[in-house]
Length: 424
Image 1 (cartoon, rainbow, N blue to C red):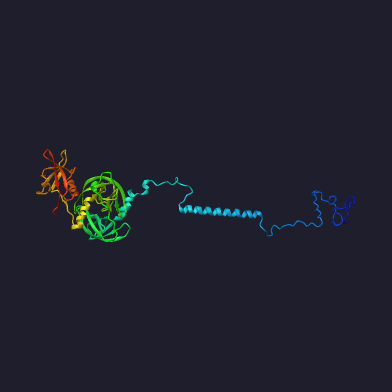
Image 2 (spheres, rainbow, N blue to C red):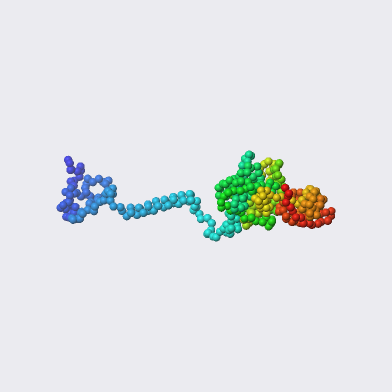
């Protein structure tokens, strides 16, 4: 029967205490659960009884966590933190990009900035200052011929456009040439005149605002003086190489098969000179032209193109200026002669060159020299090869007086010879 316990006495239903949960106004279904005989023995002993809400007191409102509302303090703090992180990341990325593309590094190299050393200040008397001053006066010379185009170097000698170069640069040309200036512009030129034996030629270009070089004194050079060679070696325009004067009055005899033989007492330098430097200026430490680069010595076999090995030779500018003035003034150059022809070396202990012939009424004859005399020195320069006599004499201008030391028999003597111009 419902409501009857299966066994045992009937339950006691104590009335609720006054003011307790069973008082007036409480739930009619209230019962003393703790004394309920039907209570599950496995249930927890603690029973939570809801508290009584006092009259007039509203229950605390419960906020739905999923409902939208105003941001909390936590949210407000997260916003600047995230913004700072994003800004830092962006700044780092930009800094990395600048470092990669701008060449900057994260490590500071070198010490604190200091005044540049004297050599880096490029003073006018420095090699860089000299090169900067001379380069606008140096040109590349190109001459067309049946065999192709010959290319060399040259330099502006006069404000009206005369340019000095080597004869072998323009030899074989049609009389027309072109020059390329330091700034890359080009102008046509004509050949004014040539002297194959001195290897000097003069061409003329028409262009306003030309800057001629400053000439030095090749007789004032000393071994060890610094020099610059400027030109277009291997078609590399505006090339500057540096060296020193290695020797003076190095007598040279040069020429191509079937062509003229060239003689000059050259300035030897160790400045790097290659094919294409021919005709370019040799400049001293003050920026003055003291020679015309002309030839080099090399170890290559016959027929191969020579390259620099530190033995370069330039025509002294005093000789080149004289020949240039003759060419501009008369169209041809005078050759300086002594009026005597020398044989090979004597082989004697004192060295020297034996005179095989003396021209009647020539400079040597007028000075008292005779065939059979042995020329020992000219102006203190020892004579060892027949080339020495011809080359050294042509270094001087006609009318120059030179001292000749010679031996006649066993006696040493000195005489002064006034050199003359060849009658040709």
